[in-house]
Image (cartoon, rainbow, N blue to C red; front, top):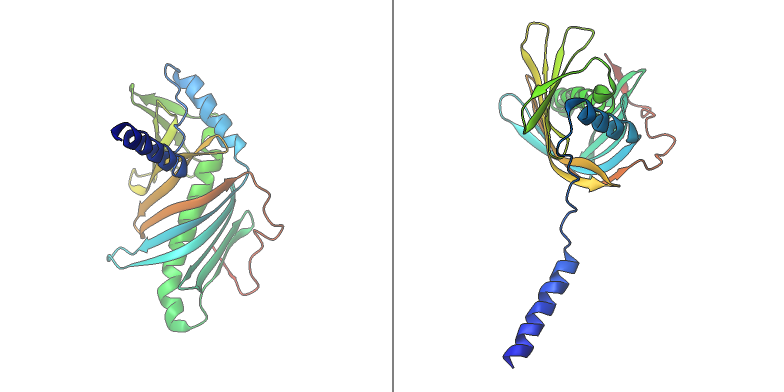
Length: 245
């Protein structure tokens, strides 16, 4: 009887494991020098042509007030992004970023618009930087590296005088934090990335946290798809959208 119960317990544990599989382990890259590590990061960045995902979005203003939204993201790095957000099934904002500019569709009601628009523009700025960092940072040829056995610190100075520093986990070669500073050295944006999962054999962060003078943006991604064909109008601004600088 005890032997039968033991076998039954093992069977239940096996079935439970099959029902909720553990995430695949990230590939590791022990022993690579800085140049080889940069090549892996650049190849990975170049391999991502499109992204689409659902997400939970939390926007927090500098005064601490926050709003939680459901959202959908489409991105074609480094300069195309679409972010639509809603709450309780009602649209809150829709922003579109292309090389031609930024378009935002906010609520028509003046009171709601006044409350939503600043957060929307903050989200747009985050989206602009995220698309750029994800799509082009490691593809530049003017990167410098430093660090230790745990972290690879990758730095780049851009044309307008800003400096971008990325801290990369050496073992998995996954970016964990970006810092963007202005020409005076003041920190303007800190973007943390975590909870990496393999998507089509590509490590991808499922949690992002961005902090700046405009507040904080927290994103939890789900149903992420990479390199899937996007609809032809994915980055076409809605008719009511207004262009912003």
